[in-house]
Amino acid sequence: MNRREFLKRAGASCAAAAAGSLGTGCASVEPFEPGSAWRSGDVAHLIPVASHDRIRIKASFRSAHPQPPALRVAGRSVTGKQTDSAARFFVFDVRELDSGTGYALALFGADGAPLCDAWPLRTLPAPDAHVERLRVLAYTCAGGSELFYHPWRGRIFLPIPYRQRLLARGLEFKPDVVVANGDHVYWDILSSAGIAMGRSPQAWWTAGRFDRDAPVIGTGNEQVMVKGFGPQIAGVYGTLLRSVPSWFLQDDHDYTENDEASAELRTFPPDAFMTDVARATQHLYYPEFIAPPDLPRAFTSEDDLSRSFGALRYGRLAEALLYDCRGHIENDRDPARADPVGRFVPEEIERWLIGRTLRSDAAHVVHMPSTPVLWTAGKWGEWYPDVLGPDARMTTNVPKPYWSPGWQLQQERLLGAGSARRDRIPLWVSGDLHAIGAGAIRRAGKLDFTANPIVSVLSGPLASDGPSFPSRFRGQAPVPSLTLDAEEWVKPIEANGFTLLDFTPETVRISLFCWQPEDGVDAIARLEPFWTKELRRRTL
Image (cartoon, rainbow, N blue to C red):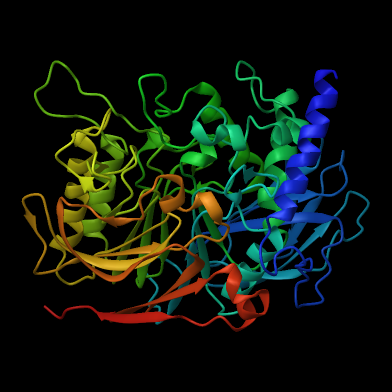
């Protein structure tokens, strides 16, 4: 048997095994059909982002368009800019729009024929606008190929129709914006899960192998990415988000690796290939952040965009600070200095985050990092030093290999800035841990937050199953770090779900949603929050 035949048979047997391990109700799940009669036509996917005066849309099409399609909005026709090599992916960028205004958008081919039905999209309120309400839909970990399975533990990720139903249910609550916090794809290559993912026979047979020495766009790597990542992004979202401005924040798996460290391999900081594939994925599938004017110029492009850091400003009501903790991570000490200098985000970005937190005139400032606050699962790339000890219990008495104390010190500085504004609720909403939870931090290190405790939320994953949950992959469920004095309002639940955040000038209401396959597919359409908590700003 030659190698090609071996891979073909291996891929077929893996797919069959995965299908056979779908579990109760999953094997017979029907393809997802959106409830509306909106016609997508030639459009494969649409993901928009918006500011108060700008709309930016990433789109892909089922057929090639050698002559770029055009987006018509507000009496203007904006020609798409091709982002791939096959003329199927385009970005549409519309500036100088009115704030807080709903627009009708339409896509047309070069021949003037409509490519899909028209649809509405609204710009955000002006930064100084007085706004009474904002609803945010937040979740994490929506990626994962249906091909991947664990030899002994079965399916790793939920079938895509389940994810689409969960997302559609979240959208039925009419959020104003969406924040998808990291892990939009899973295609690990070098790290331990790679044998079941990016370097598995089914991955090679389906998409091919990446050449780590070649660029992604414009080489054979581009087709590997489109074949492997496309079903996880365009295949999940389709056009569901077309009318909701959406912020896509990247985390470790978006760089094709889990955060792991050993004598043989430290996956982060990302190498040149990892950075290229993360940027190429963003380049094709979901919008970069529209950079606020005060973001350090080293982290913005000439188009006033940022790949890793952003601020979602919604009038004077709320501001969400989003930051990728993987792409610029520093995990070494400077031997010429006595203090640890490891950071999850660069020093310039830390200063920017603290400055925005302290000086913003928004009623609410929410931090949305890609790495969770309060909880640990003992893995390497966390803020905290907790690790699974020889007695299979979490401890800080055993050094965590290759972990930098500077990571924790940076988090404490950020938390300190949040708690210092006593007129606000210091709220952190993050993802990554494949769990749903909520709690509060009263102390961290030498910092006392009892006068204004830090509120932390795990937003909930959309696609986790089997060994993708921490307790099955690492043997440890998420728990509060032993370095903190913290209270768990909702102990982390390893299930799929999402979070709604409702802001008014005086309050924020947190609503957590939870679903598991044994609940049955029909339960998704009736999903309601299992826990809610309303927090009120203090009057000074």
